Length: 223
Image (cartoon, rainbow, N blue to C red; front, side, top):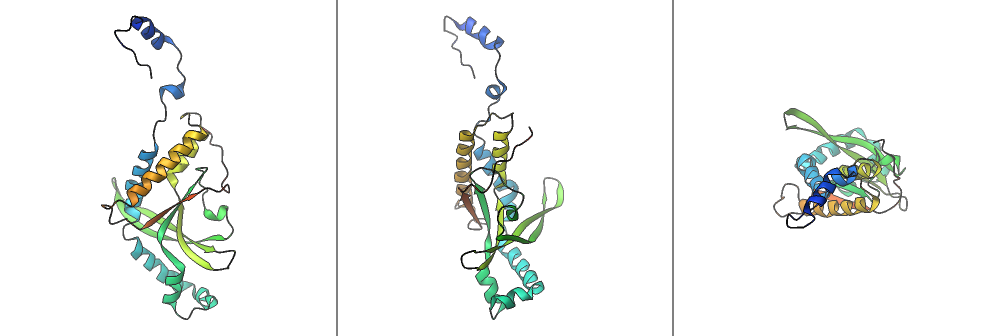
């Protein structure tokens, strides 16, 4: 952006130069600070809806799952269904935030010890759409060191995929450094929102897990 002072003796020349020179697209519409907007949108458009009553939906899913998978209980060596459920299932939404900002379509695509086992479905009327369908994905995770099995509701932090696409695309003009800064700001702001004292219905219902490994590659975006 060009700033001019009217009292500047070269005001008119600078104004003419500013109006006639070629300006790169990235400079005329910079991406700016998008992290906070992504965090707020992610919360109010999705997390604020999905985290409410999550515990009750998890209990319902657990009951149906164990009822249709009795062999899992028998193989575990546990005596009672309640013991198995309480010791194995994490009743929170775990949000993984990869360093690269690239989010694969499924955790099973990147780790063979993670297997998708089902969905937790729910509906909510939103912005004119009656009974919009929502769902959380449930995965079975096997610890390779101990062979212990756990169940968890996992998903990637979808908004940071936008940062990845902005870096890979040709419109936003976002480089790797800017992307990393925005990702960190996003994680910080989202944690603040999730743990805010006035956010009682959702507080403690989700875990934001930054992932700083290199398992997830960059994928080109045709923009």
